[in-house]
Length: 254
Image (cartoon, rainbow, N blue to C red):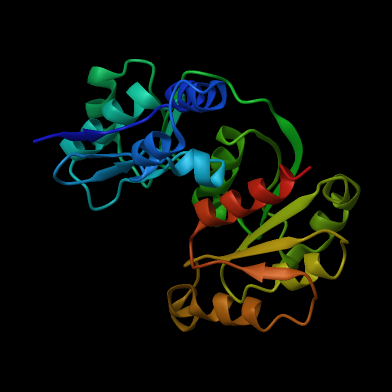
């Protein structure tokens, strides 16, 4: 059974105006704000104050959920939030979401579902670089996430260290960006190379791409963690979303 405990932004603004005008007391305002609002769907508790606290609404991790659960979460969030994003989604989940939300969009390479009621104001400044074409699913998860969060993205794919001239050619374009996401599997060397060529923060994403001794991305992860290039921060294996979220927070800083 659905249990609602919600407060929208407009409702919060009304409450604060009533407080400042003296229509309600401080004690009553505190009572209304005592519990951060959420909706309990039984299988998920949707956090409606996430954007007020962090600047971004709750983003749905779809893997491991049923298509019905994903659709239920999207439907509820779309009632309260301007935009909804779901990562690691498949086509069946998308079709289920689209039954109640026809405006939903699916990005198959990135495996992202989005519902955009309001287009974000775009801010330039994020580059997404991959070592190889095989890293593109993780790269697109990062790029699409960053775009949906209001960032213009420069994509530079298949520019790994085996052909370093491909990267060097793009350096002027890369250096114009405020944050750089570097995505690489195999030995993960690209993050160190880029980190030594730019004066901007680099967020490194190791991928599970590679042969046996890469251990599903662990070799790239360890190489990036032990990088001698200053300014390189590392997220988890295949975590394009996490890299994009952090990059967006940096890029959107005033």
